Image 1 (cartoon, one colour):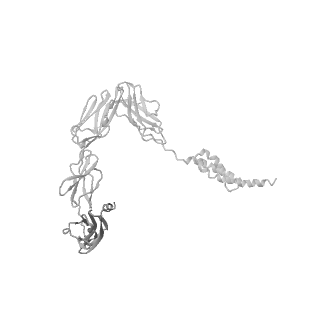
Image 2 (cartoon, one colour):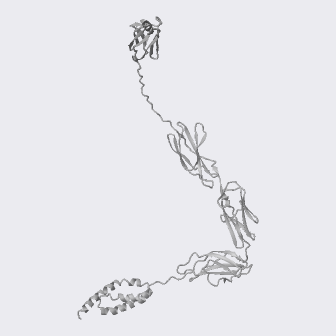
Image 3 (tube, rainbow, N blue to C red):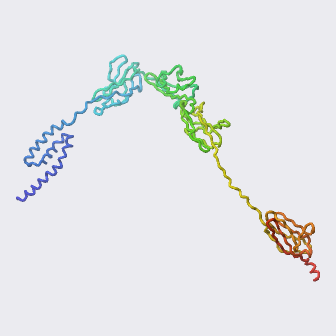
Length: 497
């Protein structure tokens, strides 16, 4: 038996260990004071004092934090009302009711929120405001029923929350309780739904139909201000309204608003009119660089764009010799350009016109200086001419060849020779010089270096050694051959027979 208490004592030191782990638990327990009491009693035992004495002290400790915890949280901020509802307008009417709409307040406190809206009405000329809705409405649309036809009502809307009532949002004009035959409507033509552009001096005549019953009241504004009757005329009929400007000026540009109103209903249409004219010239232009056959130009945008965007530029050049202007670039959109293919030795001047939807500017920006395409100086040193020596001693390119012929049949001996100066040709037979004049049997021809000796109807004694000699100042050369003259074969055959 005494052995058993020993393990029980060992278990007791293990108990404080988990209690130490529970020590950080009190921190989250402060958020919910109702749930804090049980964990506080568990946390007290971790003290190192004797267990018998620790228990009562720990029980007293939670008694002190328990009342302190409700004091820790700060009191919530007081409830505040919202701001007034926005854009209270009449949505529809009948002979006995008025339907209104509005938008929620711009500012709604987070702690108070928004419970709903109260709609209040009173007759024109009185201050006896009455609540139209018994219960708060959460919708931003309400129908005020059971009204008398012909009454004029002042209507206001108040937002309500725990902080109280918001400032009221009131419809500016009294609302007539009467059914509208047809709501006013501006029937804006399609071409006026986008920017309407006209040139300075042109006439503006815009016919804008509208509808509504009874006849709407038509009013016009320009940029939020009444129209100047000296500049624009308004003619209104039962079906349309006409905006007429005899001669448009740039000052007539702006936003024109047409409003048609029937009782408490109205419709508006905005027309954007833009009056444009020719732009001014570019503010400045300068020649940046000149090299080779090229000139670099730069310029700046015009000071006056004609009340519309600049669509491009036209660049022109003029030669100083002729003074005639020629287009180089058209509809060019950049503010710098390189002009190429200029003529060497010429001097050029440049000018630029700005362009917009109306066309080219009347004036231009011209370069103050001139651009001269300088000729390149070339130092030409010709190489010395060495004359070729064409002199050459005679030389036979084709020599004479031995040949044979028949008695009575003419034959020719041919050879070719070259040389400079032209060699002199001489024919010899058996070392005897032949001459055309002395013996007509021989005919000697020398043309283009071709030497020909024609022997007319040779006889048995015309055979032998023939030589052709070519000679000039540089030397001489010979070529020779043997000619054999044979008898006809038919004479031998007759003897044999």
